[in-house]
Length: 240
Image (cartoon, rainbow, N blue to C red; front, side):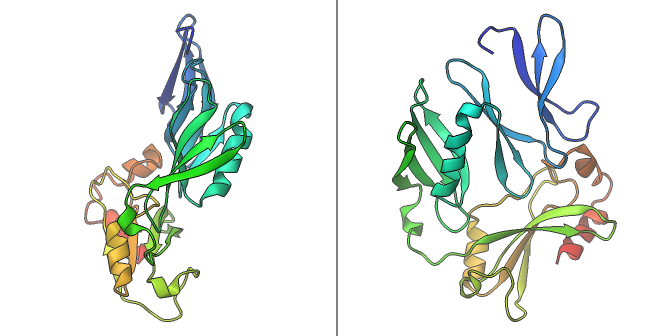
């Protein structure tokens, strides 16, 4: 922090998911600031000059910001109405009056805005891939699937453009199972080129966060130990 006496840290010792703590460097006392029962800490916002914690993010199905400083509550509430994407504050002025905000989208490129905090108004600037603008792209749907041993799996699926606006097709579709690398990695909500190109050609596409994927706590991560081609593979089949 600004005084140099409080350390901000994430810690998962003695617990399943990593949580946000402060550590008093004089006394050694550690204080819990924020945690989530199913998600590790994903991100933080810290004031550029005062160095106090403003918000913390967790990502279970989608990235969600939790306000730690009430002064930001109305700002983040407003930004959620600007676009149906995941909010990322790219930069801001030292007095926090002007922000550059990026919205990660599932059915288009990243959208950048300049946010005037006093007026509480966001002005569109540009996207990161203009070639994707105006194309008929598909939404990505989060879904939590229960595996055969009752483990909860956060998955994402995309349907062809003609099914847009619905979360289920009216007829069976061929499906592509797209397996992420790792296993110490994860799939997340957002624009995915392979999902889009295959959905465009009439396929349903499914990405599975099988056991041993990251971000869901140590129990979920370690449940994949010695389970290559066993329970990890069962998770893929159960999700399909």
